[in-house]
Amino acid sequence: MAEDTPSVPVHCPDCETTTRVAMADVADAIERHNDQLHDGEDVARVDPDVAEQLADLVAEDLGLFEE
Ligand SMILES: [Zn+2]
Image (cartoon, rainbow, N blue to C red; front, side):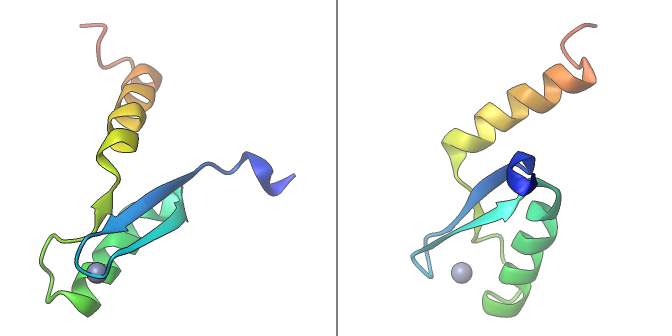
């Protein structure tokens, strides 16, 4: 039942870690990580390949490409 929560991989090249985070928590998780470990620098981020797919999904969801 909990399986339908989508998770996305957050990659941090500095820490060499990839963490899967629920999509709803990604922004918070990235902010917290960068805040605590990298003085607020934009180091950790969603895996670029996945980010692209997500952007497509979200854009479709919001109808952003239907100008
Ligand atoms: Zn890090």
